[in-house]
Image 1 (spheres, helix red, strand yellow):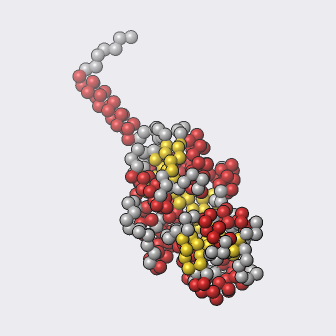
Image 2: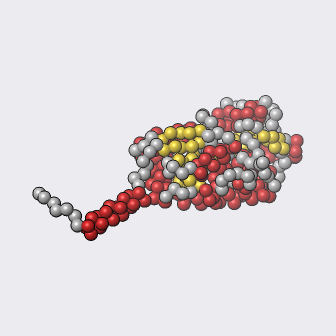
Image 3: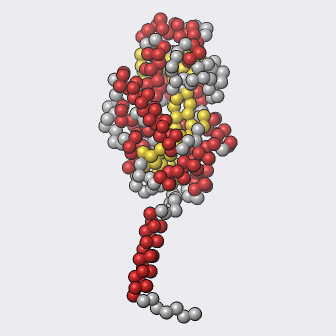
Length: 327
């Protein structure tokens, strides 16, 4: 069937309509349209790296694109966070720990990104309390007796942390005020070195992730004093909370989550959040993350944003109160 040529007016209208449709499509593209980069600020084999690699494959399958893990190590994860914040390709995400998303700039004003302004929360993946740990031969036959001895020892005791400004360091400074103890801070490169130092008698206490410390506790090489959770944690059910030995109003958790650049469109963030949450809440992934030492959450962007704001306030108060700063 013959179709007559378009009149000039009809051609103009048709062209305008095509342009309008094209612009609408450009403003609302099908996402993702290319490989997704999941940036991690810690080396291969670290806890954030293991979580990222556990998430990458199912996330890629759910979104129909490959997800590659990119380790950008340094500055306690802040190099990776800054990279994510400044990414403009629309397909870069970050698997981050709470320090990178909350107190980075409070600790060091020279940090090149603002966690509250430059990162868009996607989903809180998992949380975990810390475990107050001591050498196996520490004084006192019960946690309460240990605490009494620690109070009497003053600054003769020392504690280890993975460095100034880490959650373990800030948590111990808060614990000193809450528990009436006064151990001296000794920074180490990481938690494995802290445990070795404790087993070797160089330090007398530390706040450690349960997944790491419980192996040595159950082997009789270290001693668990209590968890920093409000009640007993499913990650360490045999260990009482610190509140059980009289340390009141003390609760501390580490956590990890997925973030995107602040410019990521809300529709993409919501799609990502729902997908990530569904993945981590699945029975298989929940069990896998539990083995890694995480209590699965899988939150909305707003849920993670609320957690960021509350932790920024709580940990920021410790930093300001104790005048802690990292240069």
